[in-house]
Image (cartoon, rainbow, N blue to C red):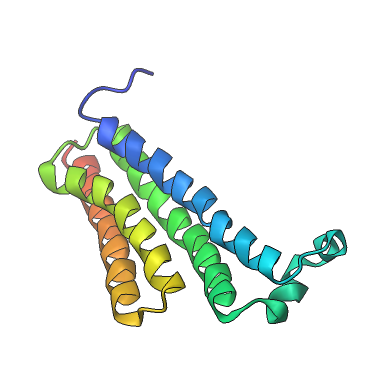
Length: 141
């Protein structure tokens, strides 16, 4: 399957959104390092949560939320890829989602709840718009 220029933003959104999930391990790894991570912690990595500094706990929560957001976003962009959505609203939503998710991580680590909430709601809205646009294309075709 060749990805057309119409579908490219959705493929990029999927790739970048998955990269955000991977990136979210960086601050979590730094927090674990600061909490004196030992090889024995690999047996139960969540058990060391209480040893994490406050920002490290937020890093863990942000990391977990990245997986939750990705499992909602990925099917939306795949739907748009498969049905050939190309409207400007969907394209903007596809590009905006990974950017909002990166900002979400920063806001979570920096303990800025209002910005974090806006980024979370914005990312969720982007995924919702992609579902709507994808379903409209399915029903029209």
